[in-house]
Length: 259
Image (tube, rainbow, N blue to C red):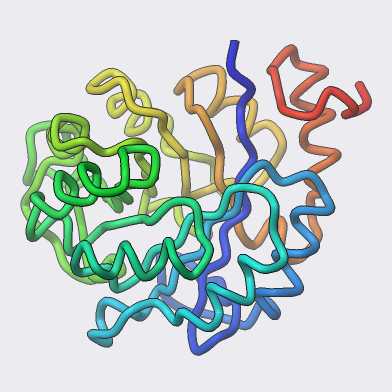
């Protein structure tokens, strides 16, 4: 059985890590380089870096910050924000990340997924799906873009299936309704995505307690769970979380984690 991954997320705005609730009401959470260094030391399996205003500001993720963070890491590192073409993917990979997350541009031009996968390999292509509950689509989960600002009318579950067909290597699925609330992951949405495709799924949005991680691995069969403020403010140590998961029989990386 593959180990479940714990993935801290660095939401970046103007070179600083920020955190909010449902993608708004942002507050400063620290320096991205210092946090990246800390998370690797604490046992994070991977790291996600999202330049959360790049798309709406019509620019790319800041390559200088990507290089600085990548220089501190040996664990896998994914970057997203403002990725609008294959050359943007190339530039980010050359800046030092292992994977590139595409979101709004991929919804508007799905061929970006296919072209990136063919050129760099599916393992480099993460499709981020931001979704909220909505009566406007068959599954009840609608894709939103532009940092949660724009509804698309696209069904999130159908979109997950299409992403797999286009050549994505992984999905980062965020519940806008749960983001920053610490009310728990949206298990029904994640379970629906899991049932629609065979891609690895990173669950995002709503982590607040150890039990939430246990639930998302057991009930939604997520491959990885992402959190931000819970880790940023040192309210839950990654080592302690992994130890608790191991006690519950959930396989985690690093067999040195105490049980």
